[in-house]
Image 1 (cartoon, rainbow, N blue to C red):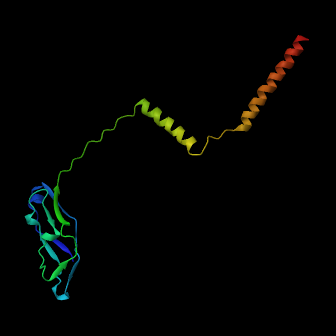
Image 2: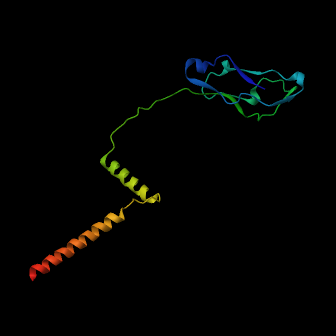
Image 3: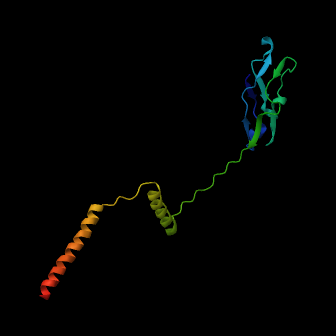
Length: 146
C-alpha cells in the first residue's frame, strides 16, 4: 500500500532540515473492501531535525487492516539540511612524491610478471665486438713487439 506525504514540513520550509522518506509503501493484510488506496502522512507536524514518523504512528484503522511491517521501521524523518562544500586545494606534488611515484611504477612493472625486455642479441654482439677489438689490439701489440 503506497504512503504519501501531505503538506510541507516547517523544518524544510525554514531550511533547517530536509524530509527523508525511507519507506514508500507498506505491506498490509485485510479484507478487499477495507484496503485503503493509500495512507497519507501529515508532514506539517515535522518541525524539528531528528523528528521521525514510524510505521506504528501511521493513521490506519488497525481493527480492519493488519500491517505486516515492523512497527519501529522509520517511514519519514527530518535530517540536517547542512551541506558544506570544502574547497579543493590543488598543489604541485613535491619532488619526493614524484620520485616515490616513479619508483612505485617501476616496481609494478617488474612485479606484474612483465619484465623489461632486453635485447640479448645486441648485448652479445657488443660483448663479442669488445672481445674482437681486444684480440685485434692484442695482435697489434704482438706485431709491434716483433
